[in-house]
Image 1: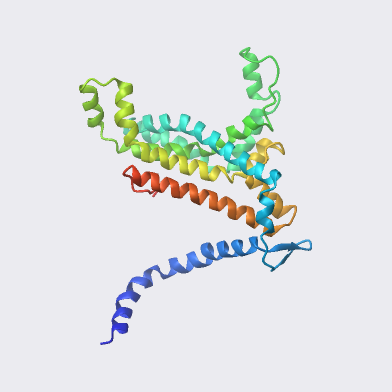
Image 2: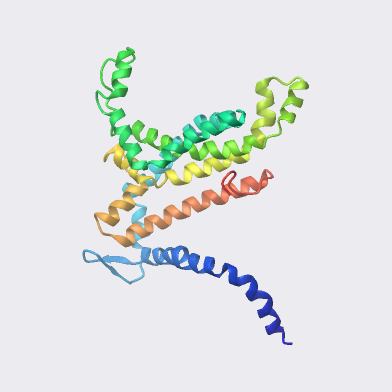
Length: 294
């Protein structure tokens, strides 16, 4: 019996069940990525055409202050949104895990129900809320907090609010998954040894729920870099993010190679962020996987 024949008999049975998955990954994941990378090194020709000539001009254009500033603004908005989502989502997920089973199911259902409707429909609801003399203005003026309409629609705070609203569940669920697995006896032991509730939380609960918090940061920061439709709907033309820039280059300027270069840079940035998360997670003793989702 030859060695080649032995390897074939041991390798093929293991490969066969996974073959459709490999083919799917090759055609629908790896193929488009390779095409986008190749396209980013070409240049535009005519209204819709692309010239297959190698050039670095698209990547050099990204260094122009106008486009570099868009990247900086996108990163800043993502950081602000992520911090706000942590402030709101961590306590929510932590205390949701401490509810009894009946109330926990009800709260989870309330979080899931909005996902059954289109995200665009939900964002248009915020337009009604933020418009001048809308429900929010009427409420604030009725409480004598403001004297005149604030005109929040098409402003930076409106975009941040939309980001927080869209991404908040992606922080709550990983934190909830970590907090649910938290051994409450450790917290009680810390309290028995004289730790105050805040000290017991900071020394026991917070470190043990860090994997969920880190996962939530990844799941909110990375998508927030590309949620261009939120900036479009709630920010008008006043807030331009990288996602808006890519959309504009594709649909209006018809400069596909430059849009591909922007997409490659954005993808590299998010890949670096995920790599740093995995290194940090493993350094702290975690698995490097996304808590609660993987």
